[in-house]
Image (cartoon, rainbow, N blue to C red; front, top):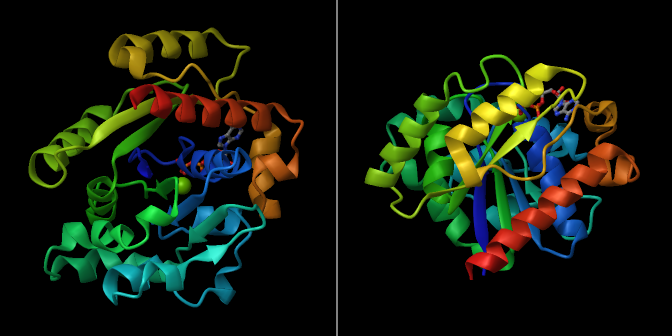
Length: 257
Ligand code: ADP
Ligand code: MG
């Protein structure tokens, strides 16, 4: 069994990349074979896991536009069981180039089909938009994880995301599901966080992960060292919670079977 999960929310700065890198690293630490797919032109997952963009031979752009085999674009990371298809700034042109491509929404799905059986989990780090790259990601995925920052206006913009999900379900990927909603960057010292948690739980109910990601300085430091939290500071709160999240993700999958 292999599962492809998009980490998606068109809002920037909600923890998509942090979750992709650290959930991926923790799943791999728990013995799973994991492929990260960086489909954000900013390439933060790529650099955050320690891949030097200057050394990248093929990136996700080449897979989408030039039909390079995903295996040829995949590079290993320092964590056993975790590899990545990187993104470079080249990807910024893909939105426009895909417009004139046949079955442009299916490009990623068709590519990942070739390698899906090699992995237990494929995690796709989406860009902060609902454009063609996000639509490709949702079309290629079994499910999506929606990170929501515990801040004012947490639910703002979510109706657009859910609308896009419904459109994809209707026209491109009937089996797409919401894997879970992840509350991120909780500041436990404020009441605001608690209010947001209640609001989000009222809306998404049992889809909300029990694991809530608190603000943790170590989590924000790790990317500049090109490391996931589990190797950067395995004893930090950040490492603890992302490991918990990974266990929760695995548990739900076992329960579903
Ligand atoms: P997105 O990919 O949705 O734009 P990021 O994962 O890049 O969001 O997070 C935005 C910023 O917040 C980054 O600088 C990241 O290091 C920081 N950050 C993310 N999660 C946490 C956290 N739990 N605690 C502290 N800083 C965090
Ligand atoms: Mg990001």
